[in-house]
Length: 196
Image (tube, rainbow, N blue to C red; front, side):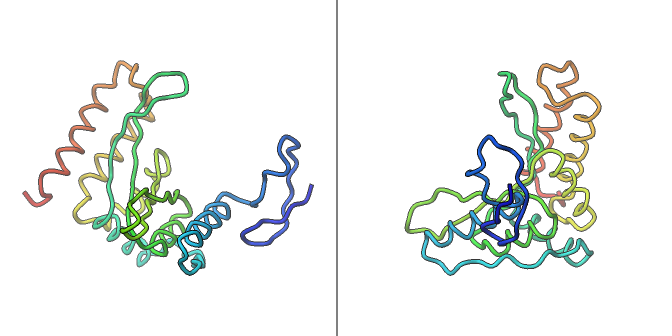
């Protein structure tokens, strides 16, 4: 079945017969850009046109590192799995009121979700850009040489991902104490200045 993407207007093939009427976009980035544009329309703000994809050159990566340094958060979370257990997840988040800046992060890295934040009507609309697990590891690997304030947090985050790849992220794992220790290290780095 050939459908037309509601965002980029390009035709695409869809072979799944389960829900043919529900598929409206050719890719996940198109779906996200469409949702962001609709969210802006609902708030009666001019429609955002996503910028063209930016190749990951050193200037773009250093800009992204500055944004992550100033507005971002690198953290290890425990989340509930579908089987009722718990596991650790590395997450990189940037919160801001500028949707264009968050769109640029998506274009630089080619990944990430932009999630609207619930706020009172008197405040400007705000969004979170976030990547988790392998994508967070990829982002931190790219920007780590350019980070200033969060360089140690990025190193601890990358170390936690290496540990998860070898031993697993599940909290039932016998080597989970090391991940718990890394989580406390990240929390400590957030409280103590980097130059102290």
